[in-house]
Image (cartoon, rainbow, N blue to C red; front, side, top):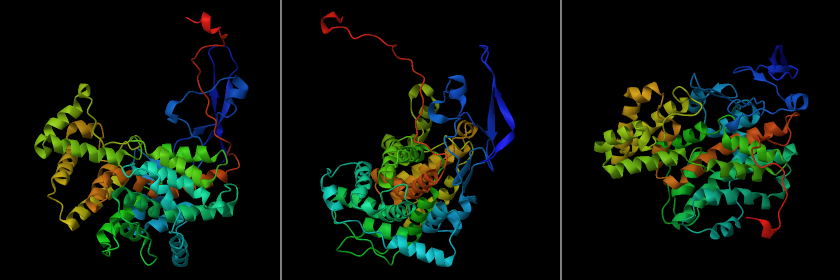
Length: 437
């Protein structure tokens, strides 16, 4: 990271001396003003709620251009990866910086496949939860509990420990998600099968039963694999920042990823596709497609307080590139399953058409996002709405690990310690209880 010859000059109207601040330029994207010495030299902090204008790290993993609608993993456009690669190739890329050659892909796939089983005692953890517990509550506990079983890979500062914990997490997440699902529906757990693909294995563990063998549908497996690829990483979002902040304390990788799972649970983040499907369900209860005009009026009326979930994105000011890919997959899956006339899916497609053509939504760039389509696809496949965020966590695990490893390897990394603007009471004395009014 080399500073630019140009510097930013910070001047103050209160007579304080001005300060020259270094400027860093990345390979693409906005330049960054280095304010690390600001407090030491001026006694002042910056104020940036939500970190909307603050770079907390430098990274080589994922780049987003929200205006162009561009998403790159290690420089590769998401469109090319989702079309030409499978999820484990994408995992290899995020972890290692380059796509695997044929022999590397075989070795990496075999390594992940050989770690898909989880300790049998995990079943006892599950039994401690209520059957109606939200899958994300279960996943937060199970992922954190992995550190209790793998003491040989909990040193975050040991590169070999980080490598084996990465493989274990990527391999075991589908098993844990399927176990959480099977527990909530009261079915027996299905063990992984090594001759299936990563996505195919997940589908079998989800939907097979001991009394009937599950034969994966290639269209659905491909759709699931694409969902994993599209959600694998997304720059410094809330859950990724949480993993980095948690890991900066030196905690073990399993605990850091569990923190990411907990953050992802929020409806404004990983729960967005769940919220989108719930919204469609609410419109369906109102009367379905016939009532869609009435629903849209409420969305446009700010006083009504009705939100259009699954549309627009905080980062993308153009069409979400992942949404374009997921839209293709969505129509492919609905066609393969003969669900084009399903009332809920007809409603979803009608809502999509309005959002893409109505001037109100087009002007505000409230296009359908990846959450809208991935929720529809997952429901069509048979994944319950409550499990959507757990599937998201499964996919995002590799991105979290790549980001965590990058942070640990950064010589400039320090334990995270945000500052604050304090507006509370100043120092005061405690009065005796009798004197307090």
